[in-house]
Length: 434
Image 1 (cartoon, rainbow, N blue to C red):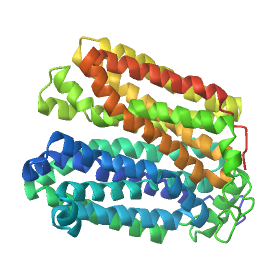
Image 2 (cartoon, rainbow, N blue to C red; image 1 turned 30 degrees about the horizontal axis):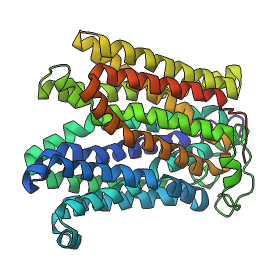
Image 3 (cartoon, rainbow, N blue to C red; image 1 turned 90 degrees about the vertical axis):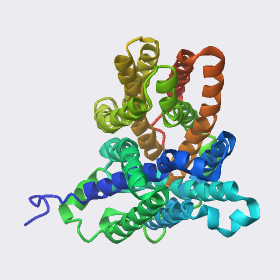
């Protein structure tokens, strides 16, 4: 049977499904400490400030290793780098359960032992999204980049929904340490499956038939200057990246969106308790709603971004989709924070979070548009800036809530999100840096 009549295999979607599972795993290992935090704080008599140090250690490791993680994927191949990263953070997840008994606990104190372990978990997870986007760039055609990365982004939502339920149940049944051992075990299993099933490129995969390979080649950018294994042979063109107006605008956009989404990662539960008067149990359930919105809206944003590119061209298609997501988020932030009805307010605010990830699919697809050969590096730069924005977000949120009230928190978030849309005027997805 000729390749024209042969039905293409769908291995590329299996790869994307694995990336979605990996994405959910990152949030399982990211949020597990926030659920176990109360038990750890009570057992070791940590102050609020000390717990803040332990929580922030992850963010610093995650932010600082974005570019090295993305660069490594570009240079050595995302399959191996992602396998190593999952195994790395899984090992340190297990070490969280033994942090009080590690040698450095005797040298530096128990709190610093926890903080250092969390820092290295963040450093490992930093490689996840840059390399996931690199895989999408290599495995999905140019017209399916956004939907390809949007499904792993939906994994954030799934992980955010399932983590509190799963971890809380395990901790009540077996204790908080067992929950970390289980998360570590799941990570090693996923790393093994990823390593033995995935490849860097479709042409390297034994299950990709000729029809699927031809389909992807017909819709893929040329490979360019590549080393063995399909990775670029030339060094990262830092001067071209750092002199591009599109790159700087994209990173500012990412920083602003990171600021807004981190409000949901850090303060949303407390907002529901203190500003909306919900009980702890009610707030725990409602805190999952933004992640449900993310799980639904991120794939929708990816699908729509690809359709818009086909209809309006790459530059306008990416812009229109970004502005739709940003505009929707701004409106929902302003409306939701000022409504008296709690149910409707939380639903609108949750929708605002979903539309930020709706737009994020376009952000990462544009990283591939701008530099197909160094997608991992540019994705790492963008995600690093997102976490810089996320790093200051809890601090500024606390100040605004204390001085001006919770309504102003979301008003400021709306302004920052609006700024994310404005700077996208200067992003030209038709520009190819290298």
